Length: 590
Image 1 (cartoon, rainbow, N blue to C red):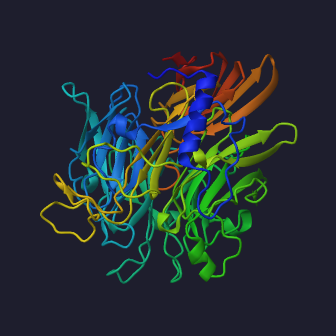
Image 2: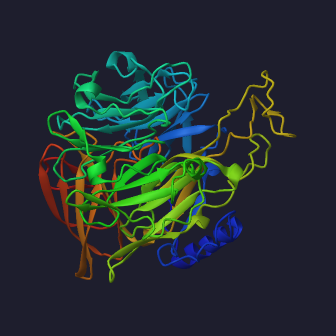
Image 3: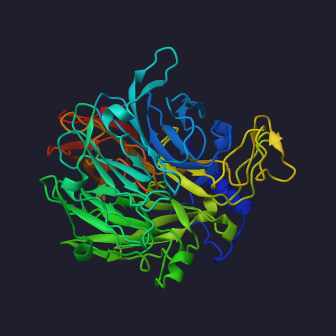
């Protein structure tokens, strides 16, 4: 486990990283100097050293979870045109790739990776959405985790796509998120589809699969009323977010529509939904691509962040004020407010595809990561750090993208020649891969072409690079980034793993309220939620990370479980990783 750096070392590391990254990026103003929010920390790319740069790919979704129950965070990557892969965390700062999932070798487009324990057996399963981005429709895949092989320490998976019903329809799947919308203790799956697909004479609807609790799913889309609202001008639905926006104990569903009206389905508590987007939140942005949910201002109401995929496309459609990301604060009483300009989220020139939220500097407020899709235009990825002013009660964001704005470290050997920087960001997650109390950042990269065998002549080989061993590297196959957080844990923190018993095992949909203070005064509350999918085709870990900054006391933790039970725990030690099991009287320290 990595030791926390001392403040002066972290500051020097940060300054060197920023200097190596350069001062500017094309089309934007110089970056601000490190603020108090990040001055104690640096983000160091360890992907090559950690062993996750085993080969270059055109990556899409990523699902982060502890798949073999050893206490360390693993991650599964879906890829375009080659084998999907699961990286096991060895617990020593390195990872081991596993390509052995059944039927996981080659797909036209494996775009979505999403994890959840759908059968409540204590082992996290994997959903892979296939056929997106206009490629021929394919079956999506559901892999059941059958437990740990004692010889290898790895999880064993069975392809249950056909048995479960998930793999029945051919789809052009762009998103897949888990949530227990009927509160029966089993997570259900909502998949969003591309829409109009070459060779298919009709639009592909979104699908809601209800978990029957016996290992199978039923398509309840028509009954629930959540199939989408197709128009000829729409490019389709690329993601979705389950969230209890009105605090009534039932998950609602937000579905962004790229090129059409977005949808906000209110849960009617009877298995049906009503679209209330126009009355509750604007049906725009018009180019909405990916969405993420969290309580950005810690007021107890879940807010909504939405990316707009292409400013150029939106400009041709005369869409005013298009932004890379928009933030809608939930004001309660059935009202959202677009605060994008007020909080300073208007400096990005990105065309974002990769998108995730998380709290990486341990201050208690969510930050935003944008993985840009269009480096040919000179744009790079963005990292926005939230800062809350307690005196004014206002939230704003600082552009601290210099922390991640530098090329990936390369091997001296020409085995994997990298394409030129910047890269194209896709699946992302915030997660504590080294269990040291601060969140690290991962981003999968790559464009529309993959590596090709030596025996297959390719015009995409880089001039002078040739073919390398068994691979011929194309210019849009790009290195992954795994940024280790050095120094974030100099600020206090708490990590909470929730285990459902009556509720679903992963506690997806659970709400957590943490009350903390510094020196017995300045008490504040934080509100967190466990989610089964977030951002662009990915999911953060299920563990709830709570940044405490300088708070030295956690007075209470309140957990509202999806099945209705509310529990309160008092006087929790800080800088600890704890487990709270539904119904137990006290947490366990681990």
